[in-house]
Amino acid sequence: MSDPIIHMERIEKHFGNIIALAGVSFDVIAGECHCLLGDNGAGKSTFIKTMSGVLKPTKGDIMVDGRKVTFDSPRDAMEAGIATVFQDLAMIPLMSVTRNFFMGREPTRGIWPVRQFDVETAKRVTMDEMRKMGINLRGPDQAVGTLSGGERQTVAIARAVYFGAKVLILDEPTSALGVRQTANVLSTIDKVRKQGVGVVFISHNVRHAMAVGDRFTVLNRGRTLGTAKRGEITSEELQNLMAGGQELAALEGSLGGTV
Amino acid sequence: MTATSADIDERVKSESLMVRLMKRPELGAIAGLIVVVIFFIFTARGNMFTLSGAINILTPAAQLGILAIGASMLMIGGEFDLSIGAMMAFAGMIFGACVVTLGLPLILAIPLTLICAAIIGLINGQIVIQTGLPSFIVTLALLFILEGASLVGLKALTGGSTQLRGVRDATQEDWLAPFFSGDAFGGLFRWLAENGLVDTFNNGAPKVPGIPIEIVWAVGLTLVATFVLMRTQTGNWIFASGGDRKAAENSGVPVRSVKTGLFMFAACCAALVAVITVLDLGSTDPKRGFQKEFHAIIAAVIGGCLLTGGYGSAIGAFVGSVIFGMASIGLTFTKIDGDWFKVFLGGMLLLAVLFNNAVRKRVTGER
Ligand SMILES: Nc1ncnc2c1ncn2[C@@H]1O[C@H](COP(=O)(O)OP(=O)(O)O)[C@@H](O)[C@H]1O
Ligand SMILES: [Mg+2]
Image (cartoon, rainbow over all chains, first blue to last red; front, side):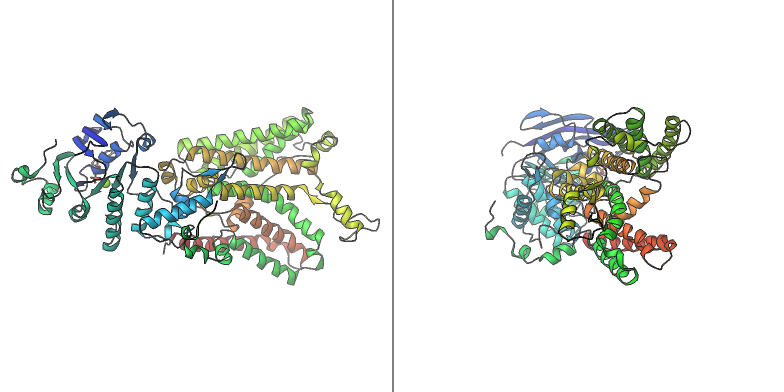
């Protein structure tokens, strides 16, 4: 097993007297899909927000390539190669796919005052990257609002990968999607993983996780119940863990026990 | 930059110019303009559609247009400024004070006026951004503050009369004056007259001595604003800031700076109109720009700007201003009572809003 790109060690996050995270450890290796599972309110979003620089952990360490780091902003995390596709996607429906794709990172050419947004390059790259992900746009000017939910997820993922993400965090990308669109997003995750990106796939749906996951970590009420490798655990066992780990004792043997 | 044919999706090419134009936000305004022109062709007496008739319409339309370009950029960025009308009065006062009271040359007076306007825009922007209050209410407060300040200031400057005169005498000799007052391309029009290409008076002088300078400014600003919106990084940031502030921020767009900059730009547009009109009339008064903020916003909306931000165009705002000017002046060429103007305006606005809403739904795929 290669060294993790990012390693989160005993992360705690308190909101006043609410303990949202009570010591969660988690790591991501290049080219794997590590699923973070948990029921609603388990603390999944809170956890990945500490990983992506949106929230500062109350306690615990973050290590990137073996070095301890602190993220003061999402920018810091992005610069360390950690990109996040949040549940709200950060897409603007009124704007074209191209303009969304390059939002905040527009390619330019020429010198001021005639420095231009290089629209031609932007359009070409967008069409290429989307085609690689299996989406044929009607045109680079197509508004994001006219895309399906799954296609929007794919644009957001393609954008993150194009801009050099080493770790890609996806917060419940499939929770609002139908069967077909879910399948598309799962196949996108597979493509991204094969390019050597470490994917953190958050879900409360065990079937979606089992379809693409290499490792599985279950969060329950702000605690992790351990990490299991693919093939070491069944859907039923994961389901039980998410429900509160009543059968924890019976499952202990099958867990990797990285905590 | 050469793209091989494999790089281009065959369906991109098949999108004709017509289809691309149909998707532009100013489409509605251009259609509206055609309707209004047809209406006046049938109702107006002859001389509305001559060169001098057109100049008559375009001069006030251009003044409004400069204001509307600022307003539309700000609206695309997701904010409003109700204080731009009062800003005209305020900037007019500052400019008048610089020129008449302090006797400054235009090379100092105009930048000073623009800097004052930019500072007020900065204040507007900072209050809106720091507090998160709707720009509507913040700039409404500024409207009254600026209106009151102009009144107080002008009374102090004039010793009670509120109308500050003597601008023309003070600026007549100024080398910069031709860039902000009078007509441009006078030589061209004289040449056209000599060659019998335009109507002339009996003495041979052209009936239209040139293009009023505000038209040149409005067209120039429309082109620059359109270039910025369509072809620069800043333009993408403006659309993004107005489309969804949070999404833009998460993607690294400096939303705060963008919005503040737009407030400053809108205020400077108002100040530019103030400078032009004060030079034109030779005086300034606190009623200058009264209700112009509404006219500018109406022009921007007719031009395809969404009230919710993130969509619109500067060309549209200018066309909206031309519709506005044509309707207000055009009625005097017809037998129709001019009092119908406001009814017409309200109807036009309502139509534009309904149309824009339908466009938004189509673009966003919302049903
Ligand atoms: N900013 C906050 N302030 C207080 N409590 C919060 C905050 N954010 C999350 N929580 C709490 O932390 C817990 C975990 O939330 P979250 O991470 O969103 O769960 P999940 O994404 O797994 O559904 C919830 O009980 C939630 O109420
Ligand atoms: Mg969540």
